[in-house]
Image (cartoon, rainbow, N blue to C red; front, side, top):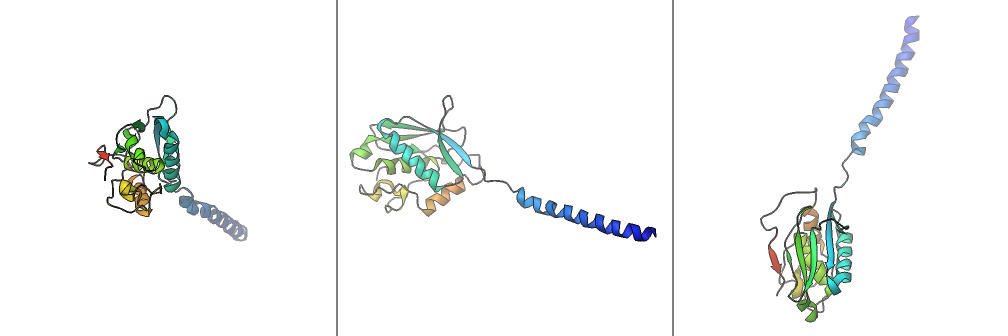
Length: 189
């Protein structure tokens, strides 16, 4: 008699235990780590007439890669990327810059005076800050070909290889430096 009463109860308890175990088995997939996006702050306060070109170039990078995002530095926060207008040739420190580090992009007026597109220049120089070296000579389709793309080249978008390299540079919220970090690159042909 006791056996007849306990058997259905044990079956019911076993079924409930199994049902309770099913969500636990699914939990690891639900608990997978979200993408650790690196946020880098920039300061275009000294970009003068290039402020809108810098903003457009930031939009290009933010729409092209997922692992890093460029944001204007809020008041009182030190920016990792400083953008400065000057009378020289466009140039930048080579990154990849990390949170807490700092690089400078110079939006040299010589480049635009010679007819090069300001948004492409800004995107190219920000590419250096994100760890991309020059690829010269190169076609217009390569952002990092810089001036060798020619004055008629206005394409500010990184190609697939360039996007992939930046994604790899910031793929897991990396910290640390590479031996080339901070090297000054002047983008003369």
